[in-house]
Length: 488
Ligand code: BGP
Image (cartoon, rainbow, N blue to C red; front, side, top):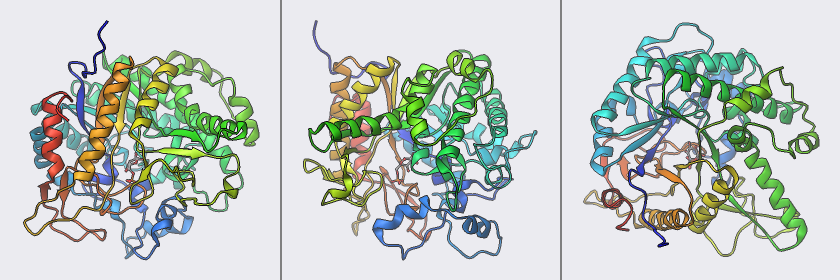
């Protein structure tokens, strides 16, 4: 048998985005406020505290953001103005040869508060036109139903996902868009990075952490409701759109034990379980054997309704998708270690064998091969890389060119490892680079943390012409797609 490192025919190449980081037009055509629209950006925050701005949303911030006279800067409200420029942007994606495009529907364009019965026609019409434009260019849309953007009213008036009623609101939203777009969208994802509730319960399950008596209880109760909602949405999608494919989406980092001490290995295994717990339930259709102990140790007692377990079992996802940016190192005693990076996402421990991005994310292409193998072994379901990318500060030369060789290197190395994983036997059917056009960063709300092949002229405070231009990586990715991953 000859080993092939070729990408399968029909492999899907493209880019990934989220409505709240991209669209702007936050109060246009009937859109309501989402959790992401109230995220402020304070330029004076020191770099190592950027993430905290997002993690530590307070009740006061949420209240201020609803005050129309507030003068604070809310970067996600601007996005990069895709709402008005999508035809131009999609034409640029088509020029690169994209065969797919991952995007999300802003729930608040369809149901501004989340609890309405009748959808907002203007919101539905906007996505009709986006999907039509994509299809005219031969680009397959892949749509996330919820990418860190639930309606704010479901948080303020209902307490977010810990409230069971939110399951019904979500399923009504999902069913509405499945019905409307049944001829236009075949691939769906139910929740973006569902396992990130452990880092940021506010945007994930709509829970404000401030002065919270038992946040773990709310995080996992909210997650349980999302599992049920995801299963019910999968059921509805299959009924409404024959041949549709519904996936889960997790944030995945390969974890290495800091040393070969068994305690570090155990800590590593524990950390991985906390992460994979979510896709275990969604892909296998049941809670893993160790879930009870994990939840007990967190002081969580889940409330399940009769029939929930049956729903999970009957409607698991069709495929597993994930974001992959970096790997992390785990120690049983992180407090004793020197050299912590201070980056919450990387767990605070530097891996001496890896380089980091400017934001401390540890770049590890071989970790992607490991991730693909681990997830495929575990689930035996088709895999899709929903996000991967390098956030960097780009310099615009006087002639307007941007030579982002660092981005090309990152991409090349990760594609090589995808080839290795495919040769290992992994069933990988697509890849979407995060932020193919510069968008507002999810974690830092900066515009200057850029991932794009397409540059957007806008700074961190929203100044700029919003003009689009091609970076060097634009032509490079185009060539990769044209050769189905052979010319790297
Ligand atoms: C993922 C999110 C995206 C995205 C990306 C990069 O966690 O799903 O929304 O933005 O990370 O993160 P950041 O924008 O913070 O650099």
